[in-house]
Amino acid sequence: MKYEKDYYQKIGFKCGLEIHQRLLTSEKLFCSCNANKEGDKLPIKIERTQRAVVGELGEIDKATGFESMKGRRFIYNTYKDTSCLVEIDEEPPHEINKEALEIAYLIAATFNASLPDEIEVMRKEVVDGSDPSAFQRTMLIGYGGFLELNGRKIHIPSIFLEEESSGIESSDSEVVIYNVNRLGIPLIEIDTDPEIKDPDEAKEVAMRIGTLLRLTGKVQRGIGTIRQDVNVSIKDGARIEIKGFQELEVMDEIIDNEIERQQKLIEISKKLKERKAEVGEAIDVTDIFSNTNTKIIKNVIEKKGVVLAARLSGFKGLVGMEINPDRRLGSEISDYAKIAGVGGIIHSDEDLKSYGISEEEISNLYNRLGIKENDAFILIAGEKEMTEKAISLARYRAEYAIKGVPPETRGIDSKKNITRFLRPLPGGARMYPETDEKPILVDHKQYEEIKKSVPSIEGIESRLMNEIGNKQIVEELIRSPKLQDYFYIAGKIRGDYQLIAITLLQKMKELKRLGKEVEKVSNDTLVCIFERYKDRIITKQAFEPIISAIPRSCADVDKIIEEQNLTRISGNKLVELVRGEIEKGTKQKSLIISNIMSKYRLNIDGEELNDVVDALSKVDK
Ligand SMILES: [Zn+2]
Image (cartoon, rainbow, N blue to C red; front, side, top):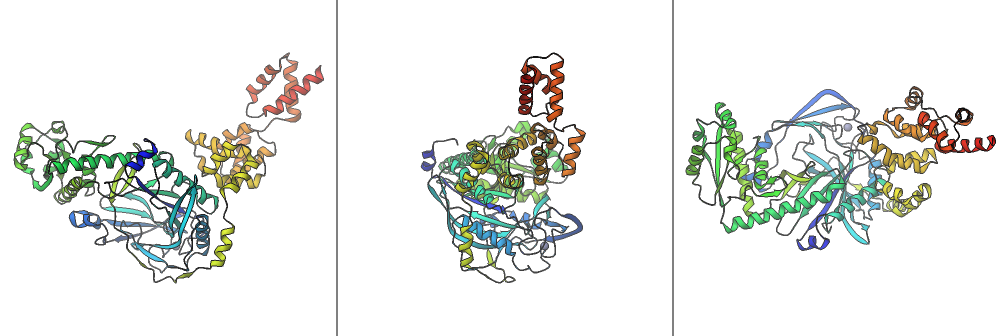
């Protein structure tokens, strides 16, 4: 976190989280398709076009050429086992998955929420094509909850059970290809009130929610199974929804950069107001470039494209002002233009000559656009229809710069840890009842029972302390997504708890960093490895080569042990080795040990070797 805690209060920092977590059920929410595997792609593809609903995109829909998005085609890949007619909206939803509902109740209880008397399944409109039906089913299952963190209550006003969306396979300005194998997996959404005080607390709350969810043991794990959206604003700024946090480690840095962006945009807006800034109409300036040497523009004109420009009165120096590392107001304007499909914009705060634009062309542009002392301009070249849309989007964004910060949904640039424009923030999503589903009557007695089975962090902590005995490892494990793996493996091995924890937390991470695909090694295979260790077939040192070879089964583990000569040397064999070394005349204990270990590092347990050497020395004396 970049600033002192009270600084965030001073700037009117407001922040709330939306956590989305896939549940661990055998079937999907409204059909019997498998909810835990990829499934095999079928050769059947479904194609749909959808109309974005008027008003859903807010005023930008009227103001600009956002309708370019409406024309996109959507193609859906279908799957064996993991999709059926329900996903592609050719069959009504089946009865709600009881297992998912029960997990949702458990999660509601975990966050101290109340349950309504009746749960109504609703349809929420989806405009990005990620659902072939153009809506997502969702239901409020909990309200008025909270979690406690460092003695503070963070309120959780609502918890929803809903359908996961489709995954994107690929997308461009014309076609988006979706995979429906993911669509309809039960998903829980947990919303906090916007009362988070600073970026560090946002990170802590996100981690705590993740931990509490995992403690239920009923949620999916792995990349993409939990997603954090952060809503953030500052005084005089605007609400920005930052989507798709994966690495919580950098959450505070990303939020700090977003604050900085909003602050700079507010500063720009103040200056623009002082200068009485205005955005001019789009003007066709293609003819100015009829003999141009500028490559990009020349290519466009050869293809019968156009060059459009707009004056930005009072914008001089501000379009090029840095608002985030290596990002300017010009980059934000460019991001809007790109929605129409163009590569970007050129603006007058840049070195125009570096594009190859000549003095004469520049002076003609100045005259045509009527550029005065404090003015800037933007320029876009491309196919006519696309460029018209692009300049209207760019003008819309430039106009908003006078007003301040536009409310947006933004994604994450994970290289720079900054936010990037995705789309305007939609107005409240439209919802209407799903008439194919009956309301669900809540059994409050059942809920009271479920409440009793909620695991507490304190309870888990003391159990882990008993097993592992090291506070630091225990704390790390509780925060880690590996906790469920630990419970699974420890439950089967019943011993060697610290070794299991260290292997999961450290060894696997190290090997992953070395490029090994350790996530392919299942928990059952890991259980085999620990069993071989417990049965004294291998040593701890053999874990690394075995896991590195990515075994897929117990048979694989045994094969690797044999092929790589990893069998443990102990008992009489070890005694013989030590004797041999002593007979060679080696006297010093440390030398005996190092001579043997240098040859059999992976096969011998250091402690056992030490004991054998001690025992033999005594006998020999
Ligand atoms: Zn299905």
